[in-house]
Amino acid sequence: MPTPEVLDGYRTPRPERTREVEEKIAKRGPGPQPVIPVGKRVFQFIAAKYRIQVTAPETVTFSDGRKIRGGKPIFVEAKNNMTTLDIVKDALAIEAIEKNARYGMDFWDFAVVLASAQAKQAESVKSALMDPAVLKNLTLADREQLVEQLLAAKDEDFDVKPVTKSGGPKQ
Image (cartoon, rainbow, N blue to C red; front, side, top):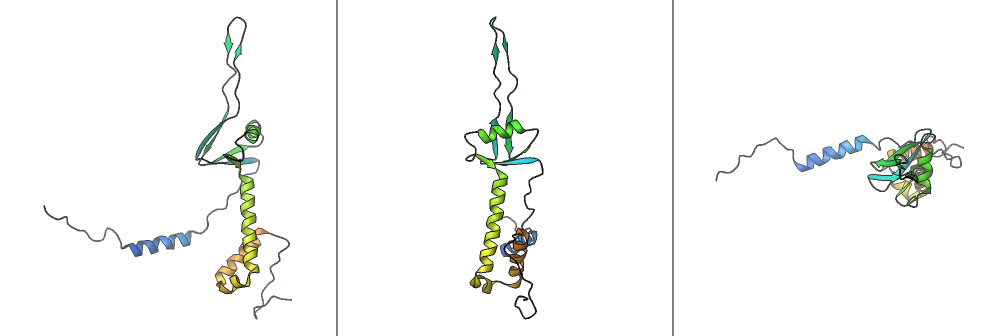
């Protein structure tokens, strides 16, 4: 059996591919920050696809045996672990979700998760700025990134003083 012909140039060596991927990741940055639209409620679900029945219309049976269906049930469906509901239009669905026994276990309000993540981020920046051992090992770019994150947190009780040419804070 003849040996297959090896063609050069179809694939670069692994270290080069790895380096290129790492450069793309570094250039990409953290990405967009999640924002909840005004007038909407966002719920996060434990599974990528999740369905909750909000209403269960009853079938009415008359004395002569006729049956009238109560209508179609209303469902809330999550796609990609999230669903966004209008506060006014979907008030019944929001109320049913919050009263559901699985609320807090299988699905929860994303605003709470977002607020706690932002609080944790601000707290980690504060702790890093307070720890002299961490600051000693940081590069100038890392320090600037910490200050930017702190300023983005908009915490009133933690002021950043401007730095003079000598390296110390202005008095």
